[in-house]
Amino acid sequence: MDNNIESLIEQGQFQEAFLQAKKEMEKSLDSLHYWLIENYDMYEKHKDDDPEVDDSAGCWFDGFSNSVEANLLSMNNLIKITTGMIKNMDSVDPSCYYDTELEEIRNTINDLLPEEEEE
Image (tube, rainbow, N blue to C red):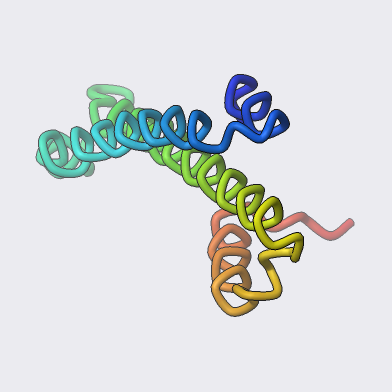
């Protein structure tokens, strides 16, 4: 989490933290837009190329992956901010309200993570 956002949350300055997270989210969504909308044809054009000859698809994938990671971190910041706000206003753990949604988020994240190899 962005240290600035974490510090703002700890101080109860949720509105400022939200504005910072919103900027981060907009920036990460713009980056995803670049890779998925404006530049996806480069990946399509080179996806079957030999990477030893032309690794354009590999470079595209690396950029896309980094963009996805930034987007996930931005979403995590928003979740932490809203969680903190709900706890501050209601003194109840927000997971009590959002069991199903949080389980879906957990399942999505688990699908993204590599499985641990059994020894």
